[in-house]
Amino acid sequence: MKIELKNKNIVLGVCGGIAAYKSVELLRRLKKEAANVRVIMTENAQWFVGPVTFEALSGHPVCINLFENGDDATISHIQWAEEADAVVIAPATANIIGKLAGGIADDALSTFLLAVTTPVLVCPSMNTNMYLSPPMQRNIQTIKTDGVIVLEPAAGELACGTEGPGRLPEPEFILDRLKACLTPKDLKGKKILVTAGPTREPIDPVRFISNPSSGKMGYAIARAAEQRGADVVMVSGPVDLPTPFNIEVIKVETAQEMAETVFSNMKDIDIMIMTAAVSDYRPKAQASQKIKKVKEELVLDLTRNQDILKELGAKKTTQFLVGFAAETERLEEHAGQKLKEKNLDIIIGNLVGSPTSGFQAETNQVTIFYKDGSKEPLPLMKKDEVAHILLDRIADII
Ligand code: PMT
Image (cartoon, rainbow, N blue to C red; front, side, top):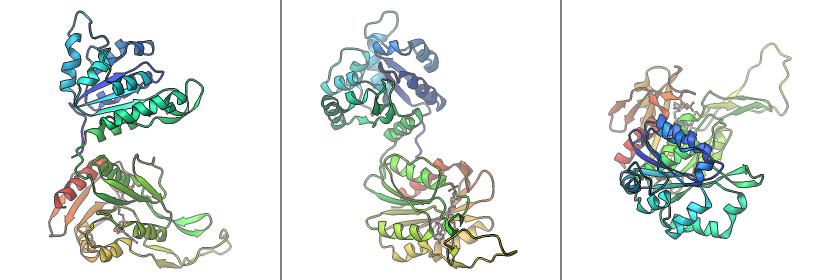
């Protein structure tokens, strides 16, 4: 149930703020995803970016004035409102937010906003003091209560020279939230715990045993679950990925830390998905100082780490438990064995060792193995597509 923007009717509202230039990039990204985008600008937005730019990129006339001659502008706000799958206002100024909160319709954009019934995503961008002012905060609260989705502005140095919240979030992030608006919330009310990334088992203060897991697969599942309305906790090993929006991320280093964190967070969890590449062994002892290369050979004594997944399989009561099996050969045999031994509901057999599948890749080649003995091989696809298919199957079963 991955939400595609392809052929979706999106209305982009652009207001008069310095961040209007970013809405050009947002429009470009929407078009790249094959969305059908129409732009409504306020009069003041034209001071920052001209309508010709939006017209050229969207392939449609831009609506600015309710009473323009020469095209269907007088009715377009109603017609566009009826056809829109979602609306995004970026940047949203204090003025448009105030109008929306007060039900004022005195130009094309504000009139359109009263007529629209599909999800509206408002992305405020303004001076920090304006944003934090009591009337602004009151208005944001009012539109949220009315069902409008309001993005927190990013914090940082603003064009006006102040520092603090007020920056328009990056187009990538707005796009992600837009998809979330459009995604049916079939996992609403479900609590999901995901593990992701590698673990690091220290040898001495500067060396460790680890593996190439990037966390991409686990983060894709966490993001997909959040988009579908779940309450997500992620226990993550060290990875170089941005913290996903609206997800509690608990950072850990070692397998032991991951085990303790998972066990202490499993209460009230409905679905547990273990994508982490947990180190099976750790050095028996960690040297307190950097080991010097004095000997020709060095033997490390390793000891077994706890199998977190197996322990979860033994402890679980009502939770739905999903494991991953990273295999370089005999996928079905190895994955099937882990499914049984660890008392899992599903195991994802993951062929690793190719540049397009498994560790670090953007795509993945997996087979879903079910408890009843059936299996479902999936073609090579993006990790976020794998994530949504896995969540579809889980949602069907539970
Ligand atoms: O992070 P990416 O770069 O996107 O790569 C994704 C991935 C290849 C890491 C992921 O898709 C994957 O296959 N994860 C499982 C990796 C793994 O450790 O497989 P395993 O067969 O060794 O372990 C089986 C299961 O037991 C896994 O769910 C693992 O989380 C769990 N396990 C393993 C050892 C251990 N001590 N405790 C565990 O809980």
